[in-house]
Length: 200
Image 1 (cartoon, rainbow, N blue to C red):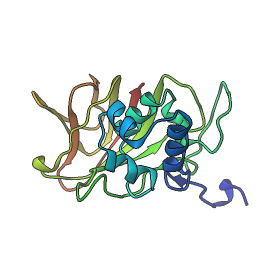
Image 2: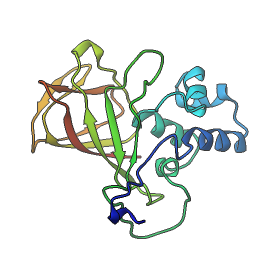
Image 3: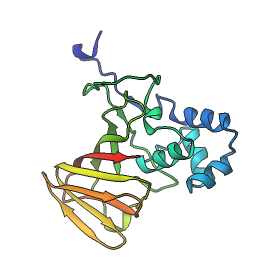
Image 4: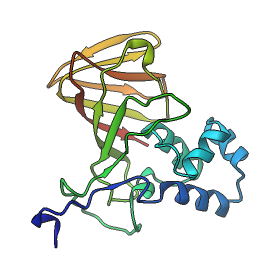
């Protein structure tokens, strides 16, 4: 039965074996966990947890791992990598991140859906991101190479760095250098939703 008949074929990161892909590529490059940790700036225990599918890595973490392994972030979202010029990802075929912790007891604060997971070797990666309501002190800030664009679809969204805080509403957009520490949180009583594009 096809997706058009109501059967959802969405997959999460665990089903795609993201951790196994990272481990396989790391081993093929002759890198130890410690060496990959040093290249990415991530902790060795975190990389181990990701490889063992114990945590759901945020976008920024996947970007750092992809760059350190000389691959494209889209590699992690695909069953098979093949050269294609045009791709369509139907609404029920998106790769989604499960609602799991990042590391220890720290909650990521957002879930994401990859909107162009079947197109490899691209210079930007679009996501539909749902941000949770959190207290300001609970926001986890990340940094990674590249640039980022966000267009708010629903709710009120707070963007913060070490030097500024910006409040965004539906229809507002934001473009920034993502090599600075940055974080998001939804404000009010309901989650916020945004279209986010990340360059590699």
